Length: 77
Image (cartoon, rainbow, N blue to C red; front, side):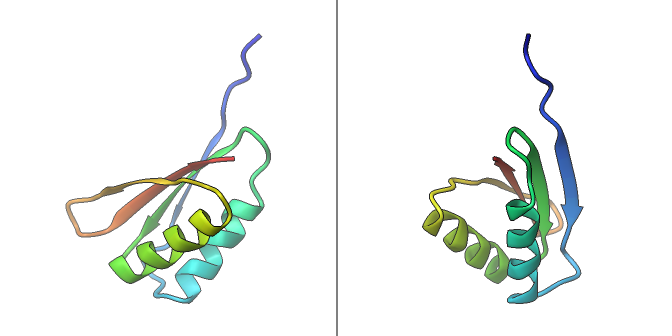
C-alpha cells in the first residue's frame, strides 16, 4: 500500500536573511520522513542562503520563481 505524502506550506516572505534561513532550516529539520514542505521566500538573498545550506546537507531542493518576485522551495524529506 502506498503511503500518502503530506505537504506542509509556509510563507516566509515577511522575513529577510538570516532570519528567513533560520526559520526555513528549522521547518525542514522538523519534517518527518516522507513529509514534503513548500516554503515561500521573498528575496533572492534568502533563496541563495537556504539553498546553499540545503546543498551542504546533501538535500537538493526544487524552486520556482513566482510572479511577485518571490520564490517557492519544494523539499521532501
